[in-house]
Image (cartoon, rainbow, N blue to C red):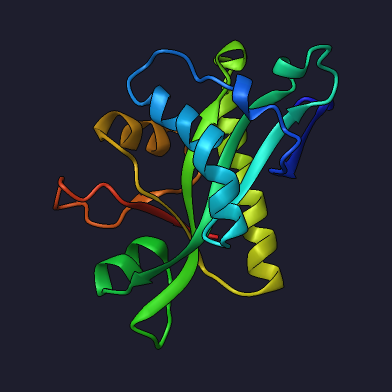
Length: 174
């Protein structure tokens, strides 16, 4: 990540009203989430919203590079999931985090910055694991294209139901 970028929790002074992901399908929903719902979800402890700030930006609107949300998740274990994630546990369910909403400001898109946001989410999930517990980072991609994008990042995400193409959930052991 660029040395002038830092990852911080969302707060009310961030210029979210100026944030836009652009015009790709689903972008308006991501913009609305950050502008309208994110602070409320964070205040209700439903999700933690992390902002990537460009501290070298000269304009307030250019300060927000992107964001992602993390929230608690439980995954029911089965033999195929345990094998795919290389997890041995005497429990029926394991906990971790869900990488939920994620967006990159239109002016910062490209140059593998989405990969940097996912890497930041993985780093924070590992810090949370060390502070509390939790074994996995899960993602529910909105479509097949996003599913493939996450798999192509090569962080170790696995399909939790590889034989059921209707279930897009991915997870990785952290």
